[in-house]
Image 1 (cartoon, rainbow, N blue to C red):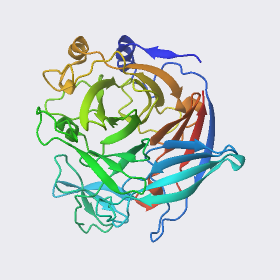
Image 2 (tube, rainbow, N blue to C red):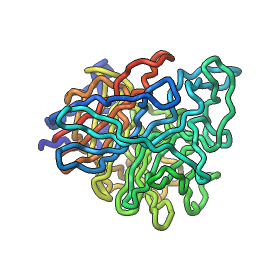
Image 3 (cartoon, one colour):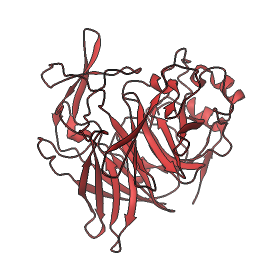
Image 4 (tube, helix red, strand yellow):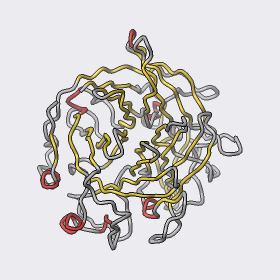
Amino acid sequence: MKKCILSLAAISLLACQSQSKKPNLPEAPQVTLTKADVLLTPVEGFNFKWGGFSGLSFIKEEKNGDLLFWTLTDRGPNGAEFKRHKKVMRGFFSPNFTPSFIQLKYVKAENKVVIVKTIPFHNSDNKPMSGLPPKDTISKVESPTDLIGTSLEQDNNGIDSESMTVDEKNHFWVGEEYFPSILEFDGKGKLLSRLFPAAQPNVALKKNEIPNAFAHRGFNRGFEAIGYKNGKIFFMSQSPLKVPEAHKDKEFSVIRIGVFNTKTRMYEAEYLYPLTHKKVDKIGDLTMISETEFYVIEQNGDVGADSVHLIYKVDLSKATNLVKSPLENNPETYSQKDLLAKVTPVAKTLAVNLIKAGYSDFEKMEGLTIINDKTLAIINDNDFGVQDNKITERKAVLGIIAQ
């Protein structure tokens, strides 16, 4: 398979290239794409269908060639944000909705995807968890309303689930973007533990804590990507953090990769991932190959031939671990030149250009998993069909990518 490896110089060059509508990207290897619609069924007790898929984890291939996956919903259908008395507000279609894990089956003979079962999230007291924003957070969150603008009570147990992975105990690990935090659930959807950002910056982290800097995420830009390998959780915020005194250089930005050891319960490593192109402002999901390699979706929010949706293979092996070799200041405060003089970011190899492969109809590609050494799978978030504050028939589509 032909590879395109981006050096730091190439990444810098790409960031400064033409600002024309069509992005100038390196050539990607040829792949074969199979697309299959998810047959979305109604959510019991609500007037909308399942959707909002924001993660993907491969389970197994059955004898007949059918494929089983786990995915999960986000916080539920909601409308566009608006401001009231300088507060950012968000209308929720169904405030009583409980985010859930969903098992999907790709039926090979019929090239379709069906929902096998759902598992709602429950807290440690076995009470259903909501998708409403919490009140007591370091991070800024929206204030919830119903669809006619009546304010709703915030919920400190509420989560906006955006990524997931599964360990060898069949425990689900979920990245969410309110606090943001990382949650561990058992196989029945019961909350076992939760990792929060430390209350203060520049302090020694305790067990089950992650750095305070992650609390400085932008609105709705929390833990969009999470993976598991050999007792370690790897996770990324969706976009660069908005830490105090962050540099204003729009040509260059980095996203942090955090590593949490599930055995010691300590945050043990942190690496920097440089975004490739000025038109790219976020990542969509990651899936682990080994302890030092993973695939990640890098994208913007556009649709069609001129949008940017890429899958990179990432190598951590020669990157600087900022836990062992900390910087004096947050990495987001350094210029490109100064930062690259102090640390080595991860290496990136372009694996798939999703647009050229034919998966170009969706703005949010938010689930990625490995089926085998030569095959990946991807799924989009259809926002429960919500478009222009109305429920529509927007599709959720599984893509199977043979390299």
